[in-house]
Image (cartoon, rainbow, N blue to C red; front, side, top):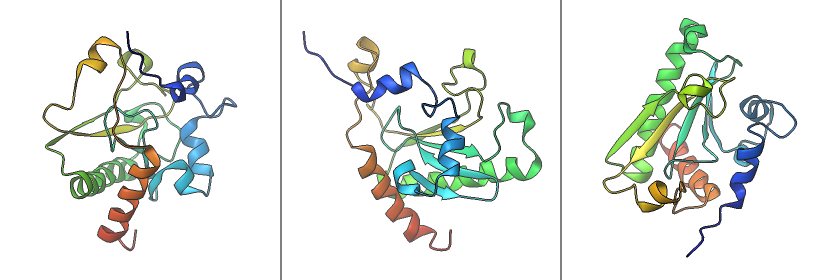
Length: 166
């Protein structure tokens, strides 16, 4: 039997936080090192970051700056920017990866699949025909073809080209 090792996932599986009990999204937002935190965009009310445990290469998350758990808690400005930032994410991903489609969604609450249920976030996942394979089904493991830092560098470059003022 072959083994596919994913030791970087242990922190996620055992902690689900920044390590000190602080929300990972709030910790990212407080930091000024966007490259280390894989933050592509900081808006007035939301930011965009790469998912450290992606479903697919280029998996982004649009996250409200405010630490809230439910979509209905967002005010009008936050709702508006959440969707505008999602549009920006789609444009960047289309340019960088040329996906054939996207999954866009929110898992609200732990029973709905939210890994970080206390801080609302919207997933933007690029998709290609045949991008699912046996590893996800049989071993509950995702095969991601590019290191996250390489994905960040690619997306950061495209972002700067498409939105130089952002």
